[in-house]
Amino acid sequence: MAADAAAVAMAAASLCDDLEPATVRTRIRDILAAGAARAGESVVVGGWVRTGREQGKGTFAFLELNDGSCATTLQVIVDATVHPLARLIATGTSMLVEGTIKEPPEGTKQNVELKVSRVLEVGEVDAAAYPLPKSKVKLTLEKLRDVVHLRSRTNTIGAVARIRHQLACATHRFFDENGFLYVHTPIITTSDCEGAGEMFQVTTLFSQAEKTEKELKEHPAPSDSEIEAAKVLVKEKGDAVAQLKAAKASKQEISAAVDVLNRAKENVSKLEERSKLKPGIPRRDDGSIAFENDFFKRQAFLTVSGQLQVETYACALSSVYTFGPTFRAENSHTSRHLAEFWMVEPEIAFANLQDDMNCAEKYVQYLCKWLLDHCREDMEFMVKNYDKSAIERLELVSSTPFVRISYTNAVELLKNVTGKKFDNKVEWGIDLASEHERYLTEEIFKKPVIVYNYPKGIKAFYMKLNDDDKTVAAMDVLVPKVGELIGGSQREERLDVLKQRCVVLNLKMKTFVYFIDLSIQLKLVGVNNIATSRTLYISSVYSVDHTNDLLDRILDAGLPLEPYEWYLDLRRFGSVKHSGFGLGFERMILFATGMENIRDVIPFPRYPGRADL
Picture (cartoon, rainbow, N blue to C red):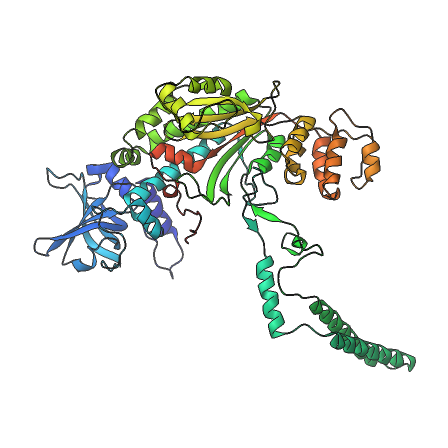
């Protein structure tokens, strides 16, 4: 009601007399929450008809109206004298109405209803063509993906949208309360954080090639004779200027002749430039694509993770996080894969693996409790229609300390299981499959589990190598229903170890160079200019961090030193131990709701063959 009063006050204070007055609309959620306390109050309500039926031999109609503010509909009663009923009752019809809140007769399921006095606006629907049937007739979630622009009007997708919204709110709230700064990392990147190479490329070369081909068709490139003729004309115009100067012609005559000469020179430049135009994608002499002609003058991609970029801020601002879309060009059609998905990725300076696990546990518990406190109605809808244990699962995770177990011990537990046969053989060194993860959390411990210290061979190169030289300081948070929810690690800060892992994993240094920027401290003696010769770099005296080896690798990779001045600067000013993790946002929604397919928990799913809207 306070929001309604504020809207009225704002409208009254408006000086825009030439505009239509602002709409002061009351949310259905607020009306239902207040119940009979608002009986007798006149309000304006807008929404879409879920179901409508004429009653009393066509003298009035009952409409179930929903505006998306909550799952429950508001019963609206419209008399035929107020508006033609046939235009209102079709499912999907939008309307803005004014009426009085009333208490319904005893014995009805509604706690309040709205008696309409005026119909202000109507968006009619052709019932025969409308792809969404009445609420009692259900389309499968798979079918709803074919009408992605309308599916948010359904109960399920509406509930998922509100749950998603609350999880996003809780994410920002949690990190803000714990002193983190929100960093917007780039969507366009030149690095591959995962090293898998399954990235979408960002390029304008194709559109440039199409434009060039069209241009050449309409205006063919000049011939050598045309260019030569233009050069002859320049010489003639130059001679004419010289003659005028020799004859001591007037300043005005000489100036006019110089203008003609300049135009002739410009024409030669244009002709020479156009003569260089070639159809197709520009290529180098060796046949490779000339990305130096692309928009960014180098290869660029859609990001697979904001981790590397956000680490640059962690090493200056201590505790940071990024929350945004990421992309993977993986030709997978499973219920757990998307080409575009959202990631929450915090990064913490001065933090080891224990700190990382503590933060992850607190964050997941915070999300679960937030949903229980702020999304109870939608969660009850999920329990009723999709997963009877959804609320119980949230209560368990939000209130139970997570079990922490090493990968080695977890493997031993799984190998000793006798009551179940796994599809994937359990042995030390494997990447635990979803069935293993879920068995640990659902059957053995019956609570969330954090598995840590994984074999180095199955984890990313940037994770800190443990003293046993076999495992890395990595951790995964496992929860019932989905298995892995979070993956994280302490980052490797030792240059020589990190360099060796890059070699073993055959990773290109240029892809990961600025991750290393943050992981080491470079101490150069007497070398201040990055353009200093290779001989000087290698012969200089370095600290025991083997920076010369790093420079060698960059130089051997054929990379110019000049663009990496900034990363050497970061090493000059010191680095810091740091840790972080990533939570797949859609996976969190799957865990919370009990939905089975990740394509149904993101508003506009992108996957192989589909990029609607």
